[in-house]
Length: 301
Image 1 (tube, rainbow, N blue to C red):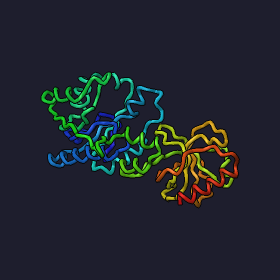
Image 2 (cartoon, rainbow, N blue to C red):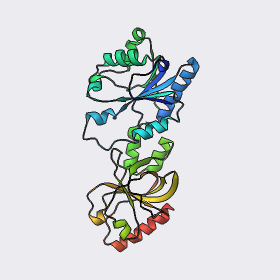
Image 3 (cartoon, rainbow, N blue to C red):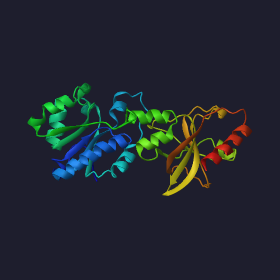
Image 4 (cartoon, helix red, strand yellow):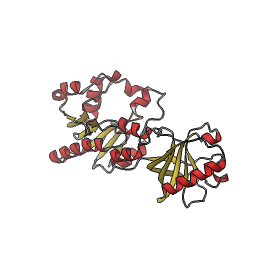
């Protein structure tokens, strides 16, 4: 899979079948769209590509939205490699790009730069300055710019449309297993281990501390997790929250990895969420906390 950092793609990737969207999480709803686009590309013997944006436009327009993403860009690319794509275009969403009118988006991006043959979008796809472009406008310019718009029907489960928004809500409620089902994989956070106060080590349960950065914040509490370090997987427990027993202020993901005692500072680790064990709680004393951690570990093993 070829990755382009902007819409200036090489000639042999033009006249292709293109899917456009944020594709945050690459969930089962996305997979339905991508599979339909792949089949079309195969049928007409054209390349199959995807156009997505970085950062996610909603985070660009609203700087107050910091914890939103299901995946980082590196994870998105990694997950897209499993989807039979020939190429991916990662367009930087900046001030200049955000000011393109919907007509300029169609002419300059879709026609002049990408020259797409078929365009797969969702029914609620909005684009261009002030989100004035929609599928009606796309349809209007098809003959002029030699492309065909395919509006994909959303995937539904129990009459609910599967979306990244639904998955974020599930994570915020601690419903990890449901979120994992809709993702068709286990949700994970990748981050660098930073130095903490070493309280975990002092009470006999050393932890790796990770900042959540742009990730959606799951429900505060304790989770059963797997941790990937240098290609090796270990079980563990993780706590998301502020550590109320110690009057913590900073929001952290703290991970106690079973069977590892070495220093992991500055290492990137993958924390893979299996299930929610319990909400975060303020304990009366350290002894009570230690007893609870032992119970948490039993449930996680």
